[in-house]
Image 1 (cartoon, rainbow, N blue to C red):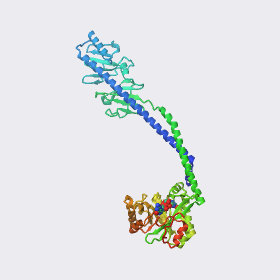
Image 2 (cartoon, rainbow, N blue to C red; image 1 turned 90 degrees about the vertical axis):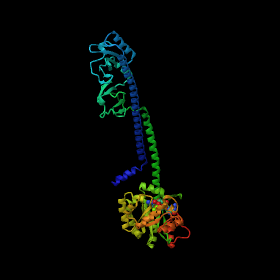
Image 3 (cartoon, rainbow, N blue to C red; image 1 turned 60 degrees about the horizontal axis):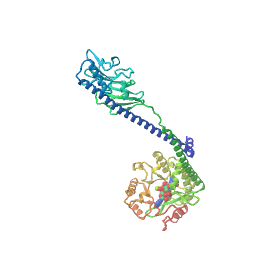
Image 4 (cartoon, rainbow, N blue to C red; image 1 turned 90 degrees about the horizontal axis):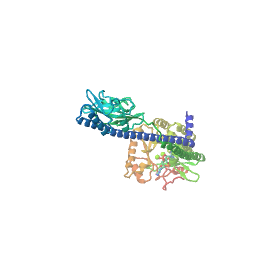
Amino acid sequence: MTAARETLRSWFYRPWFLAMMAAVFSTTLLMAGSFFIAMHQVEQNESQEMNAQGERFLARLEQLFWQLRESLDDLEAQPLRGCDDEMIATLQQVSFNYRFVYEAAYMDASRICSNRPRQEGLSLTRKPDIKGPTYSYWLNTTTEPDENRAALMLGRGNFRVATSRGHLTDMVDLSPGSSLLVVLDRGTRAIPVLGAPQVWPPIEHWEPKSRDALQVTQSRLIYRMPTNNPEYQLVLISPRTGMQIPAVWWWLLPASLALGTCVGFVVFLLARQRQSLDAELTGAIRRGELQVLYQPIFDLDSRNCVGAEALLRWRRPDGTLTSPDLFIPMAENTGQIRQMTDFVLQRLLEQLGQLLRANPQLYISVNLAACDVMVPRIGQVMARLLILHRVAARQIAFEVTERGLIDVEIARENLQALRDVGHQVLIDDFGTGYCSLAYLQTLPVDCLKIDKAFIDALGHDAASSGVAPHIIHMAQSMHLKVIAEGIEHEAQVAFLSSEGVKFGQGWLFARALSAVQFIELITRGRRLAARRLDDEA
Ligand code: C2E
Ligand code: MG
Ligand code: MG
């Protein structure tokens, strides 16, 4: 299991593998994104087209209905009744006056006469589909594909006027497969006026009062046209044109590929740079470029040195120093941090073993990374070294940051094991993470180190100036020791002492010292020298 994880991990450190993954991932993402946008565009265009078509049809149909009604009003208003030549001439005149009136007819109990030869005309015996107070409507009066047959008929009194299928087709240029329907009886019945018959209702929940004029289903666009007449609605149903991939997408394809390749290339360069830094770091450990310095920790009242914090330095062959803030996070990512922690422990006991044996009250604290806290390994390494150098466990303390406590349960177990054998556990940079008081109470901890940022804020008006006193009171109530970090001014010492803080470290007293300097400080009697001890010897 661990071997498999290690293999997987090693793959993730191969620049070309990462680059390939990044290229494939970003290309796929870009292509999918552009496809999605293109399809969305297609859908929008389709809807817009349908809306426009629907509105156009509605305007024309209203015009057509208006003409049919007007023509009926004219016929009703003239005095002639009965079928004679004069009536035929009147009917012909009406058909001539109104462009959409294909046939006009008069009928009574005994006779029917029309402007057209009777066999091709209206079917007048059927009951109307819609019976309004003034006009009656007959829809799709014939289903025969005859352009001259009536498709829509209106009646008033003894008069009938009809428009032909041909007229309707002229007005409403339906695309193939589309249908124009008149919906009656509150949406329960639909009669196709033009186009193919349709299953009704076209969707499961056909609510005639729904506000959406256009409804889009997987295969059809359904456009509901509101009319002035509450008796009927017009509905246009069109098959969808299909998801034709727009031409522009074929350009987006190579563009996505090119962009994905660029991303892959950048990832490759970054990964290689990181790998070279990794390799550099490994080389640095091997070549002994890493050093351990010790920043003394003082009793703030007596100014006696009570211990030190071990801090790593990377001194490159050209003499430049790389800050641990830069290389420690990287080593944590690559896993090299374990090697480094071991190196610090080993080096510290080699350099200060004798000093610690001679000064049993002196202690050194070592920073642990998150992965050091997650496994019991560090306790085992430490135990071996302590036996080898005959140093007491209580002389080595461990600093963990709040960020390092990823899995509290496991961390608690491992920290407790370290405390059980006599080590002290310190929470470093306290206040910068997410440790709450309740959370802290559950951790096996001896001491809180207040982060430099909160010490800096003391005596200023900054919002964070109250954090340090708060942490101090909290620690006191939990009987925890407090160490103030980053003390640079006497005023800070005075304030901290007045608040009951006993220990501190900072450039006011000493920077990080070499082992030789630290030994000298202790053997001189632990008292702080008049001149400030300087860093990075
Ligand atoms: P840290 O553990 O909080 O260490 C304290 C940092 O504050 C050190 O920086 C120290 O040099 C600096 N410092 C102390 N007093 C003062 C002061 O008065 N003024 C100012 N401006 N700075 C002060 P350094 O050595 O650069 O270390 C930075 C961080 O790197 C450490 O923060 C620690 O988190 C990490 N680190 C250093 N060595 C190790 C190590 O061996 N292992 C691990 N895991 N982390 C380490
Ligand atoms: Mg620390
Ligand atoms: Mg700190």
